[in-house]
Amino acid sequence: MERQKLFEKIREEQKLRILDSAKKLILEKGILDTTMKDIAQDCGISRQALYKYFDNFQEVLFTLIPYTFSELQNLLIKHNAENELEELICFINDMFKAPVNQRESLVLIGIFDSFYSNLKASDQLMKNYEKNFYADNNSYIIELIKCGQQSGCIRTDVDAVIAGLTIHELFFSFVIRIAILETHPFSNRDRLFDIQNECLIMVRRYLQK
Image (cartoon, rainbow, N blue to C red; front, side, top):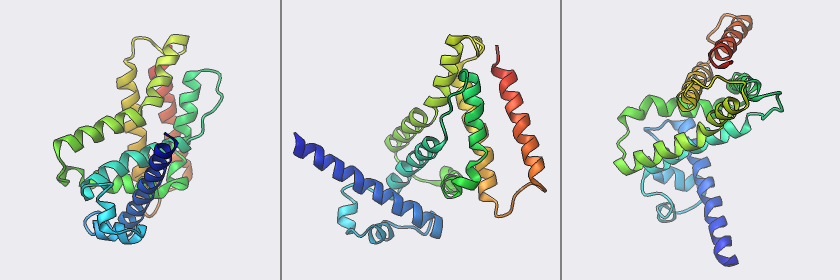
């Protein structure tokens, strides 16, 4: 039993190294110019060994993006706010810092979004991707809203799942756009600060009981 656990741990660690290599290469070369051979060489393993973990480049990519999103979200600070609504506001505030602190991860997600519709992936791979992406990356926001509804600080006539998905897509799309642009898209930091404050006001008005 212990031997099996050790084997699984080693395999998982190697899988994460492969994903890290893929992320590095895609950021350097782009999606279209990154190959399984490149990933194997960067990771220091043979192509045969790489194919024991992933069947093709599409599988690497469709595993990498949910992993990157999950990793990014886990880095956002969890605050001890007075209630779930205030915790959500703090969480969104931290999202606005991501273009500076986690630019590479956001750029990677933006690159993927640009090619998403042209990527040829099997139906099963797409189903697994969507299941993993939405389960891992929206659960925290949705759970905050549900708990806030139970505690009385968030409106109960709001669908927690739809609200959580909307907030996730809206704010992550915004910070991804900022991260991708080489120069800041706004003329000054004050304008971004104003937009940030207005977004927080909108969320509060939408959810507050």
